[in-house]
Picture 1 (cartoon, rainbow, N blue to C red):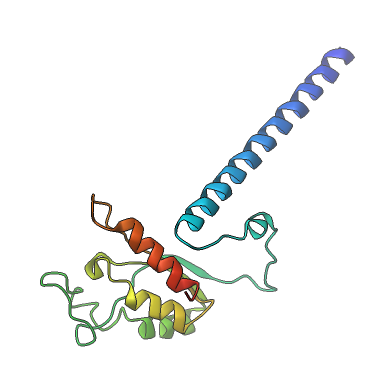
Picture 2 (picture 1 turned 120 degrees about the vertical axis):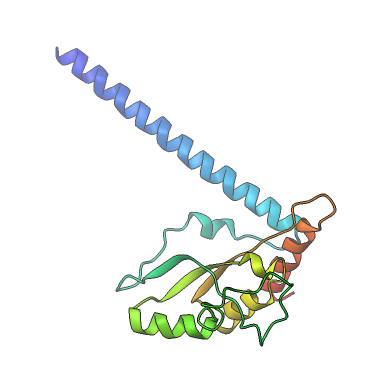
Length: 163
């Protein structure tokens, strides 16, 4: 009986080690692929920071994981049929969002490029650049053959890096 417990514990420990190694290998592969993609786009990725343990703020930050912002129709010339819904046209600007953040205790957000702006990322880039540390962006790129999606992503990476 003692022997079987020892064997079970040994097998469980070995399985846990294999699982940890596999997970770490997946993370390394993902970081390596991301670094290669960034290099291909003319940017870089600090792989050391990808494995660093994050330091947590004294009080947790409240972040919105997915939202859209867009300029008012007076600030931006929308493609016909792509205007924001009338009920949101004035209330979904970056400024309106920050006002709501202040009253609700939200610190920042992941801004997802709204489809009505198509592949024009200027408004989102401005929001991120004007309020550093508050926003990160998720962009759209044209995936069609000859659509320029790879070049669009490379330009966004270069503009983010100040190139």
